[in-house]
Image 1 (tube, rainbow, N blue to C red):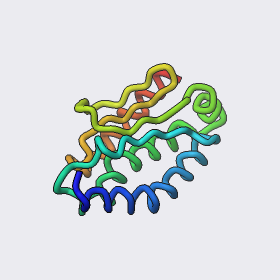
Image 2 (image 1 turned 90 degrees about the vertical axis):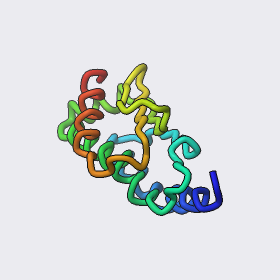
Image 3 (image 1 turned 135 degrees about the vertical axis):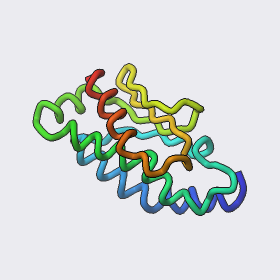
Image 4 (image 1 turned 180 degrees about the horizontal axis):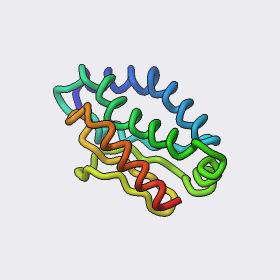
Length: 131
């Protein structure tokens, strides 16, 4: 990872990410541990896209899925009881998984940025099956 990528990750992780984390915690109703594997989601040569890409690929679909689940007390309670951690990475797969309370979002960070609705649906489906 080059200097441009490290700078872009630092800007996102110390700026927008902090606000998104607060929104995720508010929707879930508790402080959700989030582990972001910044090295794996950093794609060489695409640093200028990180601000938009990370939001559209990982955080917008996650937030919208949580909103859909937390529309009532039953959903909020299910999240509090069942969601233990969120992992964000690019491990080569293109699906979310939810196992043993860990929601893993593994997507290529700079591809199909505008497919967030499909990712939201997949995240919501995985969570609802496991909660």
